[in-house]
Every structure is written in structure tokens, then in C-alpha cells.
Length: 220
Image (cartoon, rainbow, N blue to C red; front, side, top):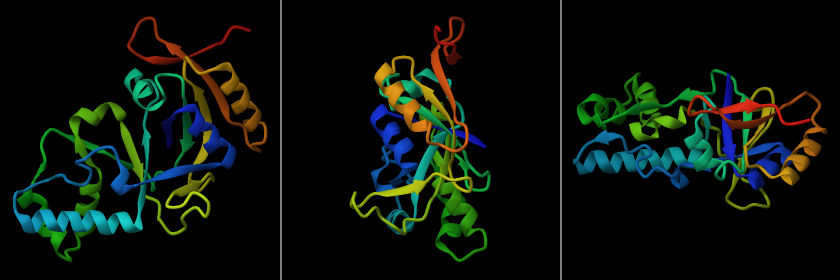
């Protein structure tokens, strides 16, 4: 499926140049409720969830994508107020997991026993914990990929990256924000000339009839 990653121009250029995408570590995510989605005041449950988050975060990172590129809010929040870029990746369906947005935390009795046991449903329950977020994040239309954290970058210590490739993340589109600088665009186009397969380059603007970011044709 085609999924989108919104980035400030400096990080988009680095990703295109090095053909890799930064993997976020679970503890560095911007939602303080990440994985903390079970409604409980029980110290045993709370401590166990912290342990699950810590152990999972030692083994796996997270790459977050959006299903659509049209929402103006996400451009403002993640692409440097329309000065950045959006990268469209073809991601294998089996690797991408859709986020579920909810109003309230999941009741303790609904999840806790399965999460704490070796029950066959444990993996399904863990996936629910990993893909549940508060509904105010819904504008992101988020899908998640959970890469292994097995090889940290030898130069950028403590950081992890996923290489571009047809079995992981295949770059298909590069979308310029409506206020992206012309110098940035020239650099990106030059970098894309070295890609063996075609990558579609798109310029965006604002829809005159809807609250949407749309593809436009630049003046010749």
C-alpha cells in the first residue's frame, strides 16, 4: 500500500540522499500515552505495562506513516508549516498496521489477563496495545511499521534507520509543500536523478473548494 511520511526539508533531503528512513524509538515518541492505553489504577497492571513498553522498545522501533497526504493540519505539524516535503512509500501490506483511535482507554478486564499470560491471544492483545491512540490524533490516519532494532548507525550513535527497498520501503512519490523553497526542490530533483526507478514528483497547493492540500501544476 502507498503510505506517506511528512518531514521538514532537511530530513527529507537526507532520507532521499542516503536512501533510508529514521526509525523512532518507542520512548522518544511524541504521545505520552503511547502504549499506555489500558484503564487501570492497579499498580501491578501499571508496572507490567511499563515493563512491556520497555522490553518492546529494546527490540523494536516504529516508523509512522499517514494513509493520505491531503490533510492541511498534518502538513502544518510535521512538514514545517508547508515548507517541508511528503515522501510516498510503497509498503508491504503485511508490514503496515493501522492505528485504531478511541475516546477512552481500554477497560482493564478486557485486555489485562491476556496480556499478562501466555494465552494464544497474547499477540493479538499486544498488537491492540501497540496500535491504540486517543481520538484527537485521528487526523494523522496513521499506519505503523515495527522494524527490528538490531543494527544502530555506526556514526549517529543511538539512532536506527530502515533502508529503502522493494521489500521494506520503496520510494514512489516526492511531494513538495506549497511553500517549499525552490533551492530545496532543485536539490531533491538532482538527487532523484540517481534513482534507477522512476519516482513521481508532485507540487501541492490549497484546494479552492475544500479544506484540502491538492496536487497542482506549476507554471511552465
